[in-house]
Amino acid sequence: MRFALFSNKDNHELHLVQQAKAGDEQALHDLLVLHTPYIKKTASFICKRTIDEHDEEFSVAYQAFHEAVENYNPEATAKLTTFAHLIIKRRIIDFIRKEQRHTNQVAGEAADIELNHQAVSVYTEHQLRMQRQEEIASYQMALFPYHLTFEELTKLAPKHEDSRRTIIEVARIIADTPDFVHHLETKQTLPLKEIEDVVEVSRKTLERHRKYVIALVVLLTGDYPTIQKIVKGGTRK
Image (cartoon, rainbow, N blue to C red):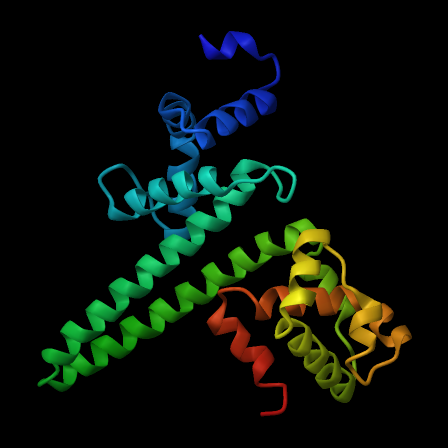
């Protein structure tokens, strides 16, 4: 029995992941069975309702966990469940958007009655509100490797509008530069010297707003369209 070989749960899980990534189907099966309650719980949290094996969202989450196992790198990311949480959220959000587009299409074809238009509007607003909540939760998880929280970012945000616009512009330049983004994602730090060479901002200013810039880059390079609009609205076109 596999469990008898490991006294440490995390080591056992990591061993199963390594075996699964090497093509061991039994190890993959063991991981999926072991984490089925977690998959249900995560899917339920995202969907704001109880999810079980009969729901399409569970199938999406189940496949997403499988994907997480295949792409998991313990040296680059946190625990498997933390990494899987992000993948599950992304895949379920994609599923919800696809369903929303289908629903909107069907509603559009049947929109010969004004009441239908109103119903679609209410539904879309509700879906957007849910999407925004899901993006916020996902964004919070994405900030985890950088030891950042929303509460801390609120305190770190520049107080003056001009300073805020400048810092957002700096973050956009970093987000649009693959080398800078790769450095941040792999080392959890900013290459300040290189950044200083391409932006008209002093090293002192970059240091002072380093955490806030990191949070903005994570936001701008992630899949958070609804909350990205808030940031993009505060920058030059």
